[in-house]
Amino acid sequence: SSLYLFGVKQGDLQMTALGLAVAALFFFVSRAEPLERLSAERPPARIFCAQVCVSIVLQFLVHLGCLMDTLERAKPLVKLTSKDPSIVPDGPFRPNLVNTAIFLLSAVTQVNTFTANYRGHPFMQSLSENKMLGRFTIGLYAVLLMLALEVVPAFNHWLQLVHLPGPFRRHLVYVLLLDTGAVLAIEQLCLRFLPT
Image (cartoon, rainbow, N blue to C red):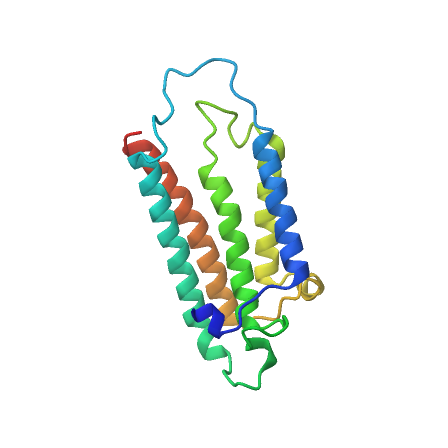
């Protein structure tokens, strides 16, 4: 509801780029090959085992916390007036600071979801062995970091992202890194300490 009040939406170009990236991630995950030798470890017996459920809930809480923090930090920087066409909930897309921050965060959470939940060994190729997926994931992280840091302003402008003020941009980069690190750590801890 908070995002709706801010008129948060994404542009066609942003949605197309993110959609193509997610489609490529699905394709590369589907190309993962099983290992030649069967593992002595058995996969989870059911979908709703403790390991999977706890990991999903904790990852969701991290993503939600990062989203709420980003929105709270952005609120003072956005002038809420009914005359601002970029925050009209049902109006056309117009880039603003909140749209930009939410797009970057949602893109990172999409990539984090694939990276953290890709199981790999002992059943499939690891992320480093699935070279297409591993390289593409690293490339996506690099592009998203480049967009967040505004390394190439013309590229940001082409993707309909607005300039972020210095302190807010730094905080957003920290949030993106925190989201990535926390999600990866949660999945590894759940794999290690929780029963399947």
